[in-house]
Length: 112
Ligand code: AMP
Image (cartoon, rainbow, N blue to C red):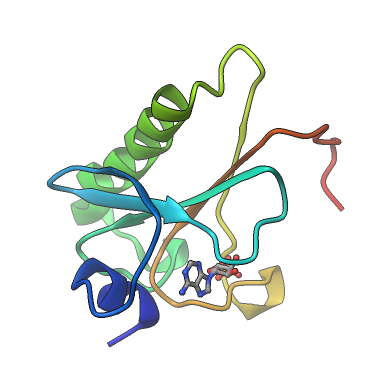
């Protein structure tokens, strides 16, 4: 069981900002910006590159969850960034797919 499954099961505490039948969103424990929230699907999938056509709805729910977080926290019109790290080489450390929702500071492009 991954760390994030334990958060879904309420075995580990988290600062939850949004939840529905499909996703859970909670504040990152090591925020990289004033707002840094993780959106995870309740059905575990290790990483984006393992997704198939069968996961289309799940992937959509994660992005809609990011939008719900933005609405809940009033991130517009300021703007926000949604990031998915896929694989160790991209910085993924928890192997339960998640989208980072980041906002509240100047976000440069391209990212470092
Ligand atoms: P990634 O590096 O893309 O796999 O993102 C994993 C994120 O999970 C990191 O930004 C961590 O800071 C965050 N994280 C690790 N443990 C916890 C926790 N118990 N509660 C909230 N966020 C966590």
